[in-house]
Image 1 (cartoon, rainbow, N blue to C red):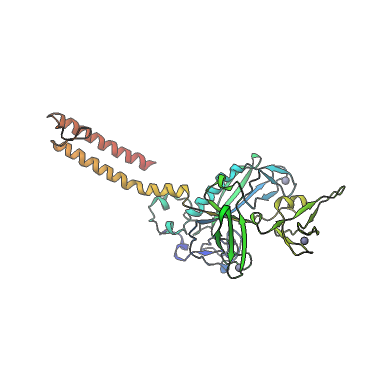
Image 2 (image 1 turned 135 degrees about the horizontal axis):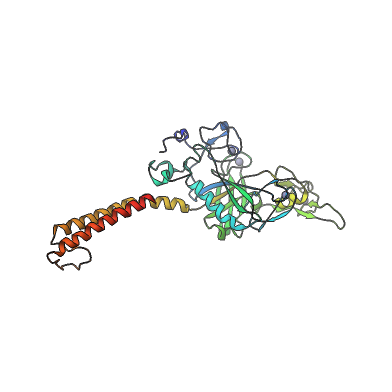
Length: 365
Ligand SMILES: [Zn+2]
Ligand SMILES: [Zn+2]
Ligand SMILES: [Zn+2]
Ligand SMILES: [Zn+2]
């Protein structure tokens, strides 16, 4: 158990607003501001992997206004919601963001494999995220990728569980073939289906599902229609062609004629002059242990293997010093001549010294 954070004593709770693990010490969520009173006990971890909530935003290099990236945007460009300027987005950025979010979630202090590890184990001792979920609920860093390195992208990752948009209960996920996933709320009897962007497996293979409005497959996208000489474009329903009124607080709007719920993508927000959407967290399900967790687990296993090797070498050296026992590098049964025994004994001592130096060197590493 981790000794210092007070949150370790309570069963993990999820923020009732955004679904991140909310530390017991916080009166309000440090990600979304929802009161701690709305928190609820977290359900058991899903077998499929760990969930990470990601927030991304950048300051437009032209106008300076903050624009969120509210989904796994892999088409190579982002549009400033304020000045509508299209900027290049190097999608290789996701090759750092996704593994980063994976290790934040996977190594956070609320994960059972971290909570159960001894305080001096590398999984705790050398783990920068051990307080995430117990003291703070997020880890922030900055990436480059928009217009080369000109605009820094602020990234925030948190462990947690995606919630039902209606009742705020954690959803359950069914993974289908081809990157399809269905998030269900039993209480509301609502299913929402999503698909991974085509590029996702090549960007980061452990990403098994991405939950964001723009990745929904059960919503058709609104169409922007620009009439001949008109200066302004009109948003229309993809089914009946009726005019739509976009909302400034959600990606979804409803057709007033045919009642179809329609998705208004971020790129359309900019074209319609709706202003920047709010930064909204989106969820990624990450399968298997992160690379960093694997390394820390290997580090935990390593000292024992070294101790065994040192003991074996020490035994061999002691045997050699005793004489009459073949040393290293000698074929079995090949008796060491008198006088060579002390020499090979010296070799054994050197090997022991080398082994000790190796341990010291690795310890320093
Ligand atoms: Zn929250
Ligand atoms: Zn701008
Ligand atoms: Zn619900
Ligand atoms: Zn319609």
